[in-house]
Length: 258
Image (cartoon, rainbow, N blue to C red; front, side, top):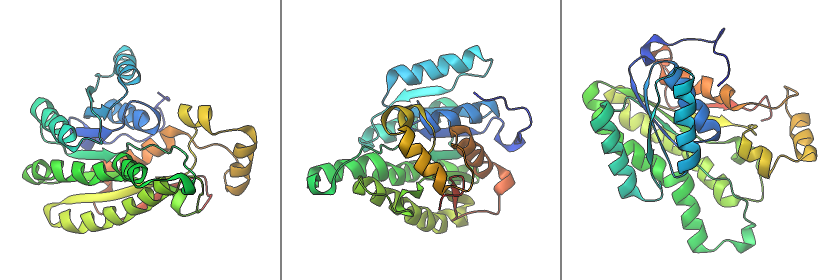
């Protein structure tokens, strides 16, 4: 985790129950780290056992209270609901939900089958709604909360080579807006973060060739790569009471690309 000295602390996050989907690696892991460092009672869901267990161990060795990791395949809505129920039984009502989990696997449009399309929607979109639906009763009973959905600038560029992913990420913006108005009367805020090309381990390993990175940076106002913690710090602000008047909004973290 990056050194937190010089960055904001949010007293409202201390002891507040937070749940992050896809928290075992990448942007999600950074969000988990930052929430835990703020004193939030943090849980995260992920299908990857090894990286998720390593994260909890690393945080414990850093002197941060280890988050609760629950293995969950988010394509299985029954398993998602059960994991959220387990989180609430062990930690209390979820007051912060970060819908982060996604997969940007490339897929030429001509090769997409109906079955593959449905699977991509299950991975990248469907669980956002059902996680919101599952945490809402507890949030309402607790007096409110904050939901942060992770979209992407991919639909704004627009990107090519993975149309199902791009479609799902565009839909998350619409989901954010409608659920903000559905839940606003219950003091629940719903906002969206749209990262650009973030230099996670997965992106470096699979897609970030020297030429591709140079092209992206040339299009950005900031001539450098954007890091996971820069997304996490925005998610912290939207989760905290410091953003109490903000809902139904989408915020870009991309170094000035779009």
